[in-house]
Image (cartoon, rainbow, N blue to C red; front, side, top):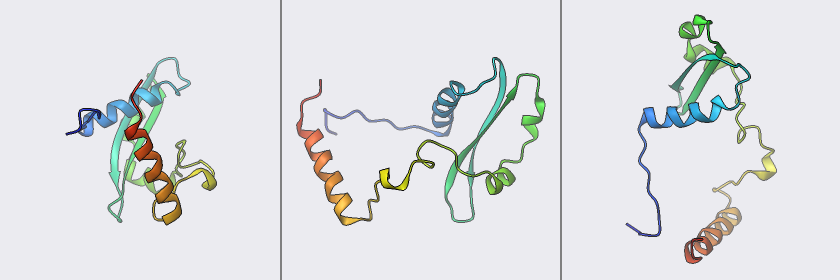
Amino acid sequence: MNPKHQYFKLNEDDILSIISDYLNKQVKFETYNSRLAFVENENNEYRILAAYGELEDKSIDEIDFEVLDKILPFNGQRSTMPKEFLIDITNSEQKAMLQKLIAKLDTEPNE
């Protein structure tokens, strides 16, 4: 392993906890009840769905995330970003540019 790198290996609970911490800052409820889960679709693609409500709202425990997955559009910062700002790694020009940037970062000293 490269001593200049930091490595992370996260399990499902780690990932959900990180996402929960991030989303908690965006919730407009002073106190809330929440539930997060991984969902897999028919194309074996995974996504995380999260539901937040008032603290007393126990109906969150009854939400069917598989049904919600079929009707809820993506609304994360990356999924709603304009297409011109997204990097397509299947595009050879963009992939080469990204590889050059990574190589440059690997050779620059960390501050």
